[in-house]
Amino acid sequence: MTDFSSITGKVVVITGGARGIGLATGKALQALGAKIAIGDIDEVSVKESGAAQGFEVYGRLDVTDQQSFEAFLDEVEKQLGPIDVLINNAGIMPTGRVVDESDQVTRRILDINVYGVILGSKLALTRMLPRGRGHVINIASLAGETHIPGLATYNASKHAVLGFTDTVREEYRGTGLQFSSVLPTLTNTELGSGVTAPKLLRPAEPEEIADAIAKLIVEPKAKARVTAVAGIISQVVGLLPQSVGDAIGRALGAQSAFLDDVDSDARKAYESRVRGIGN
Image (tube, rainbow, N blue to C red; front, top):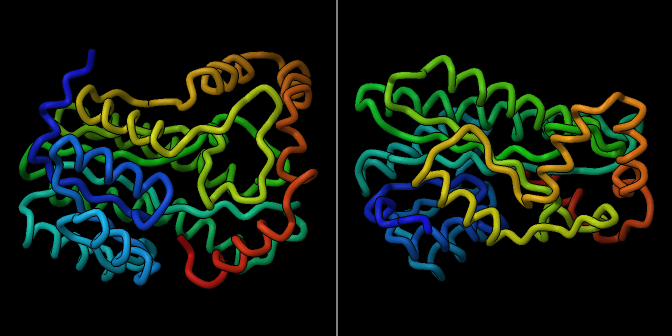
């Protein structure tokens, strides 16, 4: 059984923390004794969530803006002390065929899902390296290990997060810093609204992702896949010949889940919010 006592007193920053995986993670780690700071570009929601949960620090954070990100981390360290864990969770997942994706949405996906992760990791590194300790956890996706029509740019962004995280983990081996990726399957959050889960694979709950993150903090490793079944399928399919792997994906429904049989109203509502605020 995992001993979570070492989480007590840790200062944890979570981006995209107003809802979904970020909020669930904040709640879980707070219950384990961590000091929680959540940031989100949706200022109203992050203040409501932060106040309701009694988090130590909460406020607006634009992960694509260096000044905003740095100021937020400065405020956290001013109030709580050195940051022990940064969880780069902010992300968006617009769906649809790539030819129909506007340049505005393409750039927004890459700005938040890729640049935001790289920027946050760099800012954390400058703070953690002199102390010789710290943990950066980047929320990727099982989409980063496969390909799902209807999510071309999102898939690309999550492949990038995995490649970046694996590389900096090696780059700073032996420094006392830890780097991990979390790879959720489709999760029951607003991010996945209007999306039908592949056949035979249940969606994950945000609390399951939060539990995986808590275990990573206690027992660091390169990757945590959630759910276990979806993670195994993703790894196995990736080792198979292309035609076989693609056939299995189609059989599971993963090749059409994000284009067909979706709630178009829910998808439009989410994408409208994506264009407006980003997280």
